[in-house]
Image (cartoon, rainbow, N blue to C red; front, side, top):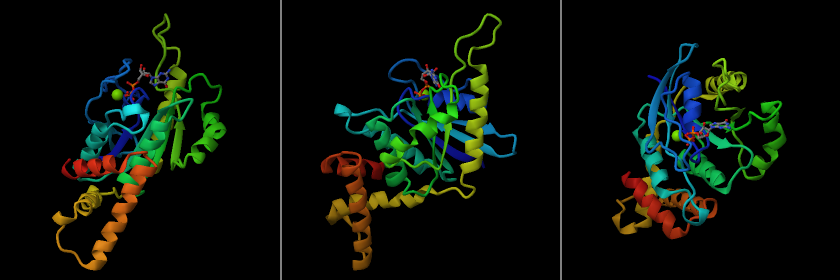
Length: 263
Ligand SMILES: Nc1nc2c(ncn2[C@@H]2O[C@H](COP(=O)(O)OP(=O)(O)O)[C@@H](O)[C@H]2O)c(=O)[nH]1
Ligand SMILES: [Mg+2]
């Protein structure tokens, strides 16, 4: 069974480009349009030279929602359904963002995936694209990591890359061929180094359903007082995170929790 690796991030960050870069082909559609072109999650299999198979999931972009406050609920729900669908479990999340700035929506996506959906059980790495102009792409991380830490973003690993080959030269080569090949090695090395050999199984996120039950007490099945306390604690924590860190209103958080439970 291949190990599932999910790439997520805003539209236009370079997710599809990085899937192609790692797989060494052009199977994932790349979009220069603002809306992006990946509507649902698409798997791309890659057989690594180390003998391991990976399944890279190119996902819909999580765009900023109304007023730029929350990631779009639809995109979140789609991603959550994907996670629930992956019965072999998840081995790695790759958060893709475009240099130079961490946008608010990126921070919220990070929190949502790492702390709320995966309960910190799956390693998350960052791939920063758009660094072809740097003399030393890797240096970018060391010059900027402080601002990530300030926002509570502590990735398990990082790769500073160029996800494009750039313009074609007259002889058929491309301007950024060197950076592109270097980036491919860095991305694959990051995946090989950080993926979970024992994938995290999605049924554990069952608790999200419980949030809904707790939100709508009358529908809840019978539980012992202790169980109820535990469920309530987890639910309050999750809804608290959705509201404080993802800047959702309580009503939005409950609405999302309800949609997730049926996704
Ligand atoms: N300059 C530059 N452009 C990139 C880089 N990575 C991707 N792109 C371009 O950014 C646009 C969006 O990329 P895409 O992979 O479709 O982003 P996605 O929406 O996250 O899948 C495309 O025009 C890519 O060619 C990069 O590292 N540098
Ligand atoms: Mg795409």
